[in-house]
Length: 554
Figure 1 (cartoon, rainbow, N blue to C red):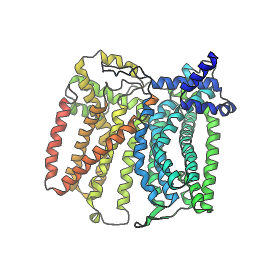
Figure 2 (cartoon, helix red, strand yellow):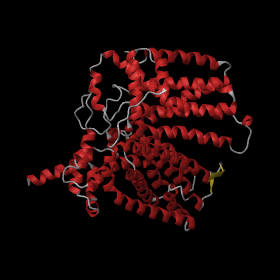
Figure 3 (cartoon, rainbow, N blue to C red):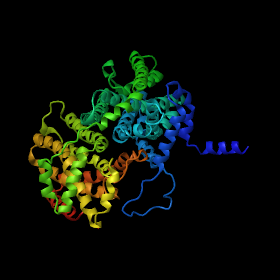
Figure 4 (tube, rainbow, N blue to C red):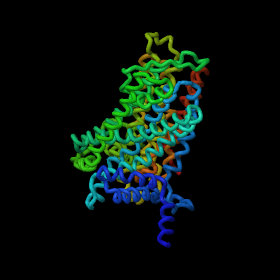
C-alpha cells in the first residue's frame, strides 16, 4: 500500500513532458533505443538545466536560489504575447494567405532558435566521452540528445504559435485547429530533423577546423535562405482590394522549393476543395516527412561518433591582424584594457560556440535590409524619384544583432578558466567590459553597418554621410547601454545551458521597441529640422568619448 502511494506521488511530481515521452516508449524501442537508459539520461539533463549556475564576483543571490527553475519555460509567455500581433491575419478570409504568413514566421523563429541556440548542444562531444564509455549505444545517446532539444524546441514552437492556434479554433473551426496543431508540431520536428541531417552530412566528409568553419558558414547560408524564403512568400500574394481585404494568390509548381508552402496546402484543400497544386504540395509534405524520418534513422547513431572529429584539430598560432592591432592602439587607453582587447579578439576568432550562436543573427540582420534595399530599387525608377526616408532606416537594422551580442559574450566553452579573472584586482572589471564592447563594435557591427551604408552612399551620394555617421555613433552608444544592462558578470565566465537558450530572442524582443523609437526619432529629427544632424553628431561624439574612456567604471 505504501509502495503504491509512493509510486503515485512520484508520478504526480513527474514533469508533463516526461509523461508524454513515456507514451512514446514503444516507438523508441522499435527504432533500437534502450528507452530506460534514454529516459534516465534525459531526466538528468533536464534536472541539470534547471540548476542555476554558480554565482561569481559576489553577486547577490535571491531567496529562492536553491529551487530548481528552468528559465526557458518561465519566459515562453513573452513569445505568446508577441504573437498577438499576428491576429490581423484573420481579417483576410483566405486560409492559404493566413497560414502562409504564419508558417513563414514560425519557421524563421524556430530555425534561428535552432541554429543560434541549440547547435552547441547538438555539437557537444561530452556525451560520447562520459556516457559512451558505458554500455550505452550511440543510437540511445543520439536519441536522448535529440529528445532533449525537442522538448525545448516544441515548447518554443507552440509558445510562438499559441495565439494563432487558439484563434484558428474560433475563426476557422475545430477541424482547422486540430490540423494546425499537428502541422505546427510537424514543423518543429522538421526543423530538428533537417538540422541533424545537415550536420551529419557535413560531419561524414570533413573533420577538424575545416568542419567547424563549414558548420558556421552553413548556418549563415540557412539563415539567408530563410530570410529569402520569407521575402519570396510575399511575392505570391497581392492585396487587390484593401477595402474588402481581398487577396489574390499566384501559386504555382514553381514555388515548390518554398517548403513552408507544403504545410499550407492542406488548408487550401480544406477551404477551397480539390486543386491539383494543393494535392501535389500536400504530397510533397507527406513524402518529405517520410524522407526526413528515414534520413534521421540512418544518421542518428552516426552523428555522435563523427562528432569526435571536432576534437581532431591541429593547433595553430593565431596571428594578430592589422585591424586588431590598429584599433587596439586607437581605442584602448591602458595596458590592461589592451590585453583584454586582444584576448577577446582571439577568443571570438577561435571559439566555435561563439560563432554558432552569433552568426545566424548577423546574417539575418544583414540580409533583411538588403532585400528591402533592392526591392525599393526595382522597376527601373530613377534614384532621384525614391523617397530618401526609405533608405535612411536600413542601416539601423544592424542594431537587431546587439541583444544577441550582449548574450553570447557572457558564455564560453572554456568558462572553467574564469577563476583566473577572480584573481585580478577589482578594478579589472571595467577595462574588461570596455575591451569586449569595443571588440564587438569593431569586429561585428562596424563591417555590417559599413556595407549597407556604402550601398546608400554609392546610390545617393555623400549627402547622407552625416546621417550615416550619426547612425553608427548611436549604435555604439546603444551597444554600450545594452552591454551594461545585460552583462551582470564578467564576460565569457558562464556555461551555456539549454534552459537559457532563448535569452537572445527574448532580449531582442525587449530591445526592439525602445530602439525603434530612438531610431525613428533620429531619422525624423535629422530630416526635418535644419542642421539638427550636426548637433546630434556633437552629442553622440561626446557620449562615445565618455564611454570609451570611462564606461563600466564603478
